[in-house]
Length: 241
Image (cartoon, rainbow, N blue to C red; front, side, top):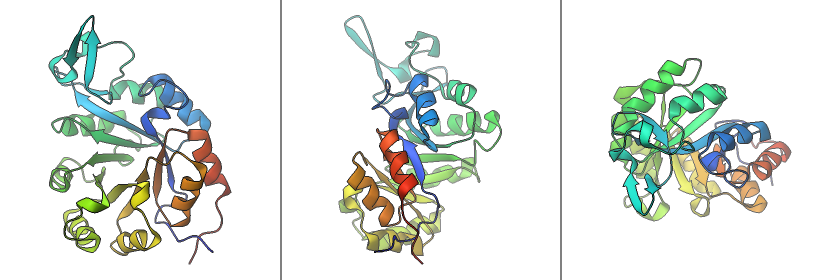
């Protein structure tokens, strides 16, 4: 059976938290290694420190002795050295990759766009800002006419149905929808593509899952296992008409 067409060909291979199956997650080591292994995109989570620096960490909490501290309450200089800033990422890895960022701290969006813009090259255009609130992510269009906006959700959260959501995303300028791999079907990708919205799938860890997501036409996949993801992308068949 021929594969369904994707809007992005080849689809983006996002290394989740820097490809955390291969190196400590959300570290410069992991990001560098993921790109060397062939990832065409990186994924991370963003928090804003108390002095306004966007940094890359999943939980937003650091531990010092027996206490836990929220990153948003700390100065950048107080963070452990393994937590990189977004500026560190660009300084280390350049700008020749897609970058998907879950904006955990909503006020970080503006600083993220400013850092990407300052990095130069295609960094701003290749930036994907993700958030579970459709209204929140749509509001970020005023920050940049180049960055891409991604609504991260689940099929069971689409109270008005996927077609209504696809139409709404198109109307508000949200570029993509990101679902758990288990939510996707060929019919669903075709529906969102009809509204010219990109389709991303996360938690794609196994080869059979990666192959199926690519067969049904997804535009990007997120995996901890960069080697598996790159291998499947390299062996995918011809796209359907």
